Image 1 (cartoon, rainbow, N blue to C red):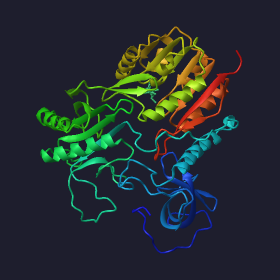
Image 2 (tube, rainbow, N blue to C red):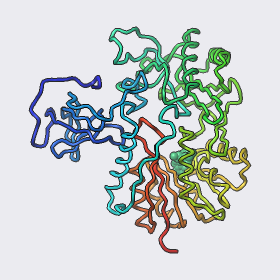
Image 3 (tube, helix red, strand yellow):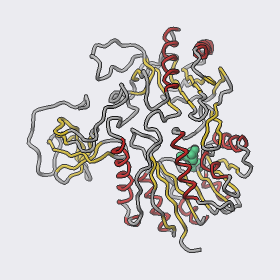
Image 4 (spheres, rainbow, N blue to C red):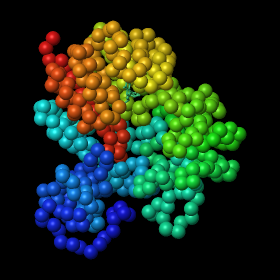
Length: 478
Ligand SMILES: C[S@@+](CC[C@H](N)C(=O)[O-])C[C@H]1O[C@@H](n2cnc3c(N)ncnc32)[C@H](O)[C@@H]1O
């Protein structure tokens, strides 16, 4: 059982609607969009912080809500048949992965159930089929970007004695206490090359006596280490974020890291003097190399800086592009609008099959990257419009045959629905990382005269509750 759970004296299982403090017996049947376990007890839906599909647990009610009961498991009565041994030594302590202890088939099934539940809540979407989730090409080693934190005092993990020696940490936030950092020796969802750079950075920084960030005291020099390892080219970008502009110290650390011969292509340095715990910096200084690395996506090459947005699962993104390509079914004569285009990964991947691609994106740096990516790949039929997509659509004279939608997590702004209906493309390919927002937006588009094909979910983030979906919509009538 998770460390937060303790076996306590048995209380009678409640038959009426359980109240706070009651014990209930719950059969776990899946997980919700935040990775919490879900199940049923005496006809009531229950949410548990932890739990695996198939497990039977005795749980104590901590809160009653209208639609569900929140509880914490206090005793495992039956093991889950889907339980597996986590590959990561830090699993359970580290806040990075939710389910390395759940077999991959059950993870995929759970993600499909998430999509089904989101659609089931909307009667107008009743006839839409939800396909099985397309697995990730690699359930491990898939992340091409990780943001690690430095911490002055490492989090003592549950597998360690309480009096284990303290010391600095370079790793990920602890699952139980966000402000604490688990000292990550290696992380199986990133590449071995990234593991080697992580370990070397920690060792070199400690050997040089550099101070690690103390989140409580708001002091210490080293705050974040960002690693980007391009899957397709093997190039490595290292970003070091410090609390002040200590160039000499960072240059020394960077020089020592390059001397280790770990294949580091470029190193950049940024300063974040703000209290907010983000691996971002207003300005970035190049310490080694060009400040950029190249990543392959299908037959295209993308140039990435520290801050560029890029799909974090490169091989998974290639499958996503294939799904989008299949649903777009272009014949070469179409004008494609790529709304929320980021640095152009999806739109540029379709450009050679279209007459023209117009990308819309609010982040100025992403627009610059997208233009550079188009030029580097010799794509002359793509252009990118900066600014809020809603405002920009009104200024663009072209009419699209196909609209590609890949909005941020909250989904489409309500005013985008009438704007899309007025644009009236024959086809929309909707990509979404949030099934609930996708169902809401499809509901509105279907009411506006579009017919939705089946939902094609794809797993880009194994061991997390996240799931990406692709759906094609065709306009009914001319
Ligand atoms: C999910 S990402 C899309 C990524 C891109 N399709 C790709 O595969 O690389 C969503 C993008 O929408 C952009 N965005 C968010 N709000 C926007 C708005 N109002 N107008 C235009 N772009 C916006 C974000 O900056 C982000 O790049």
